[in-house]
Amino acid sequence: IQHLMIKAKISAIEQNDGVSVFEFSAENLSLKMLSLENLQNLKIGDEVRLGFKSSDVFVATSPLLNCSVSNEIKAQISDIEQGQITSSLHLNAGKFEFESIISAASLKRLNLAPGDQIYAYVKATSLYIA
Image 1 (cartoon, rainbow, N blue to C red):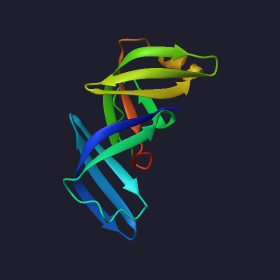
Image 2: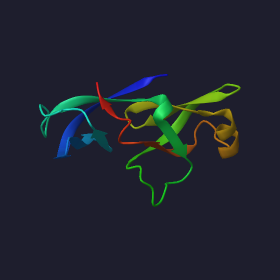
Image 3: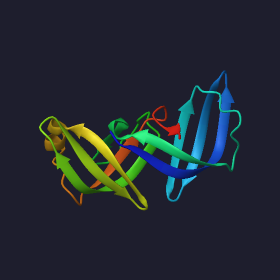
């Protein structure tokens, strides 16, 4: 399982009852992270490296409406490694390259192919500061 690292800048912080929501800007992306860790030393404007696991990325062929996931990344499939049970989608979003691991059944059902434009989603709880 691959971990993506994105250089990002903290653009907003909201903290209450030991829970923090961080907003980040990175190139053309805006991402949110929800954390239960004590990250008091971080402040707006700080540069960090964000990570998430390829198994925490799910994809859709069109934008999801009325969805609780706030991290949407419009991407293009650059390559697909097909397996019997899981498949790995190599995704490209501007300067960022990352992977999504999905089931082989989902790959077939969504009829995905290299070159397709898709929407990748990562839950705010799946993002972490590396």
